[in-house]
Amino acid sequence: MFDVISKTKSKIEEAKNTSVYDCTLLDLPKLKTQGGHITPINNGGGIIPFEIKRVYYLYDIPGGEGRGAHAHKELEQLFVAVSGSFEIKVDDGTTKRTYSLSQPYYGLYLPPGLWRELDNFSSGATCLVLASSLYDEYDYIRKKDGYLKFKEIN
Image (cartoon, rainbow, N blue to C red):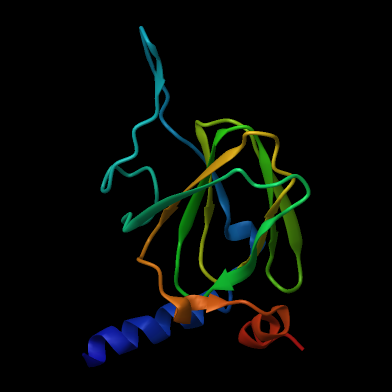
């Protein structure tokens, strides 16, 4: 039990130092078949830097609406625009960066400890998210001032 608590504390401490430059745009495999393309993503396949524990997708986002506006203490995620396009605005408390996703063979890896906002969804856009753990409300930081406190930014 102590070992699990120790690992969690260590991971949270690492998240406090995460930067927008720790995000990575991953080139996902694209296999051409007679019937189109396939992009396989498997646990242990060396493509993404975490074991997939949860998969979900966002769709039918109304025009002008956004998603996200939170950070995670431990959760790692990979975002993929499986159809359409959208932007992910990432903020580490001192630096901001915007990523545009529009191809299903690119994924944006977000480590823990970064504030994220998803917006500018095109009509019919679908965002696939692969996550390193099951849903845990404790892992979320939902207020920006709480996030800055977590990052120890005055």
